[in-house]
Amino acid sequence: MRNNTKKLLTAGMFAGLMVGVTSTGVAANHDGSGSYGSSGQASSYINGDAGVNADVDPNSSCFRPDQYDKQMFSDPNVPGPGNRNVHNDACFLDRNGKKLNGPASFESSGVGFISACPDPDGTGPQSAQLTDKNGDGRRDLCFQTAYQTKGIAGDLEFHARMNNTGMPGTQYVTWCSDRDADGCSDEWNKSSIRIDWSADGKSTFSSGGYTGR
Image (tube, rainbow, N blue to C red):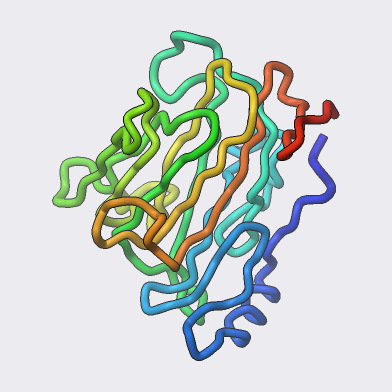
């Protein structure tokens, strides 16, 4: 069952947010964080994967981002990104809703890890790099030089996959404009999602513990 407390950014809200940009280039936050600048409004969202992830709004997109998910652990030793991975997509949008290019990074904190950081154009000149930034054995930084341009669904957006095979708690993923390729802590143009991982996919975690739903 979907969490009915989720906040979604509709096209109308996005237009209103653009009007509200201040002289510093920072706009109001929307269920996560976001701001507007020369690289465009950062908007990160969880993709419902055509209904496979039933906890995510089926209309989730850069224009209507669902930024919260509850998910079961993936089974251990499943190859690739995992059998219950969470698909995180993102865009930079100008004032007219046009999708702009990168470079950009996805940076994970809390539990879980980044299980896929795809090359944005396959054999082309762009590249992606997945690293363990803090040295804890989990891959937490996905840097991509550009958005996807493969002539398939998902072009003009950035993509990554999140996974967890048994550590209960919350995974926070911040996506940002990242020209120096060192993560999001020093960047201001960014947007975030949150994933609560548990054995049954029904627990909601907070600073004081969790509640089962």
